[in-house]
Image (tube, rainbow, N blue to C red; front, side, top):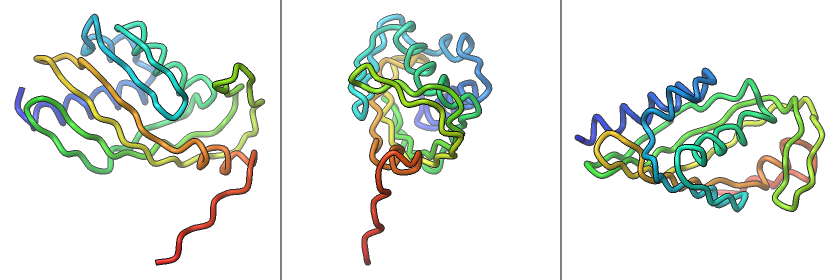
Length: 149
């Protein structure tokens, strides 16, 4: 696919995620997709792994929405620079197996994902973000101070 088609497909999948249309999003995912969510240590495979990744992000934040800020696309994939905005209204699972009870607080978290395509299917998704920002916005630790320019 062309760079423009890859960028458009990524935006479409994010919109399907925003609307909780996981089954429709999965139509665009390879059977043997690789999903790495580095900031929480998730390493998942296949369409069910992609579904698990989407559910992991929606379950504690049902109103969560991704906004794509910028994309750098090529014929083999696309890098998406985004922000996730949501309200914490359900338990948030932690990598150690514990959970954070709902805080009712809003989060706004920047993240970056590298998507690779084979034809018109997502072959891999590698997600990078900052857990410290989330924990600070939920009031679970002091928010980091902004760096001076």
